[in-house]
Image 1: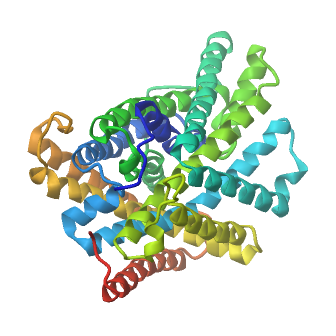
Image 2 (image 1 turned 90 degrees about the vertical axis):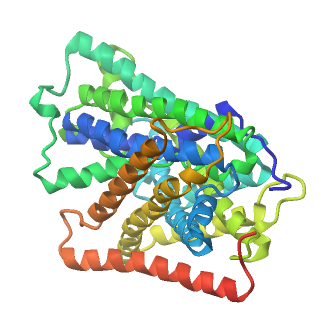
Length: 465
């Protein structure tokens, strides 16, 4: 697309993937489930992450356009389905930002030390810290990837370091003192007879999601046909290692009963550091995790804003969203609109209890909505595979057409299963049926909104270019 600047190289893409996908909270969640989570990580890798990587590498190398999953779906199934995929991808991210930023506000308090902090329960602190962080990353995104990419690069490194420390400390502690968790062959076998294990598996798939994000910036990647697939491969190996080895190390550090789902990694590194003679490590680790979380928010905000930009070019949304900044060459209007919408949800999330309850329902709904574009992506892989013109930089899925079909079908079925499982409410919900009605109804509202917006845009003369 004319005007966009190709600022992202291979290194930038690898770190972009790492910071966007790796969530240290998933390591804590997995460690809390015990050794069987290692097996579930491997299953999630085989049944979701590999198909996701295959689809992204194949489609990115064939169609390296700005808009990624929006453009792929549009090409495979037409304008309406492309719009639905893009709308679902963009709208669910608007609600996702507050969870990242509010969690980051909690991490930041550990910079002052591991002891409980009085600001932990302060709504004013959470609100001001989250909004300040949000508009910082918006400013960096508007200035452009030439400068903004260094935030993601630094965040990727800041994500690797705590995971590396957790692993090193865990190995030293296990060698010197033994493990806080007992590992047996039987403990690695998940209880698939229990509904909680199956629901937990869908959460682990979500922890692996996000490889498609960088492809949305296809018009801003140097040599996207070549660098896109290579970055997915390198980052994929790194991400899988972080999850598997990080979960093992945290289980060595703490028994699962003492692992906090949100701050478990910081707890684990602090506990291991104290045991092996490296006390006082928590503030530095908290700073690194805060930087990584800030970069993750920036990656998701900047990436999903490109969906608005592409839709603005197609006139499905106001044409102003398709404008580029005259100096920095960024879709600044789309980024600013993204920021305003995210600000609204951050404010809503820290209001009174009734607003929080409504927000949590909305959050659960958008987790399902997030997977709808994945259904389109895997279906697009199957639909477009025969049309792709093979070239020296076109990624070929092992097995040719049969391999592409296997990856597409496997990914589609796994994603469908994750969507169904996400409808099941948490165990502490009093009225499970009402919860399910709200979640399913919320998903339907997202789709109806997409239909109404699409019809309105068509009447106004919108359409793909």
